[in-house]
Image 1 (cartoon, rainbow, N blue to C red):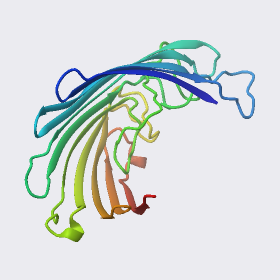
Image 2 (tube, helix red, strand yellow):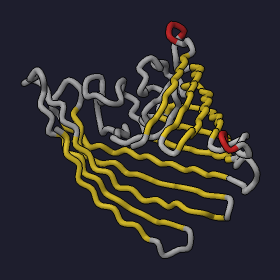
Image 3 (tube, rainbow, N blue to C red):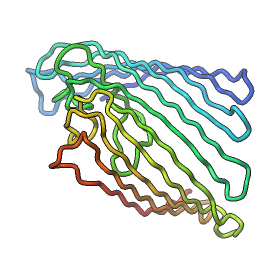
Image 4 (tube, helix red, strand yellow):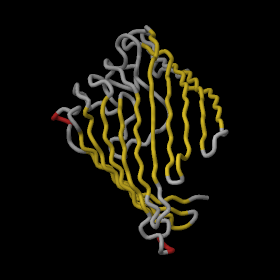
Length: 256
């Protein structure tokens, strides 16, 4: 079992702005299956975040957040515990002019620190082998592309995109939208691993991805979407595993 305890405070005293801070404690009470008496796999962590979101002009919205992670993790293949000392940050800006088709342009940067001696960013096995653990490990969600979909661990992520509703003058297609996103990924520590273990080369260049989304809210309680992502590996992938990756999804959603 894993337990989470959290507290958040928001300040709304500035027009069109929200300032916030929070603290989350995570305690790992998981049972080993099968039991391994010679090794400990426990990972306990704390997260302290501050951020701000709102409008800086009628057509511009923003969000910025910085997170500090502390805690204790176990050195791989031992029972020795070391401090977790990791960071993450995220910034996004959206421009949405009040014109026909509701175009929306956006930019996002996100970062999660890494550890140069980790192969796995999620597990004790193949995890930290010496010294403090500077890998940012979290339990939330950050949009990071359909095809690669990496965790924000040992990673710099850049994202630019555009979306529009090109047929909004037609009633039946009023809520039909199309969006295109471009991602660029880099390792924080070139020698460390990322969520995809195949990116094993000592190189910062993880690669890039293009995503396309078609969405249509047909009725108030029914939606339809098509998603496609194409990831192009960079120099962090060896020649034996640098084939491109594709993702394709068709879904219908009913809301009750």
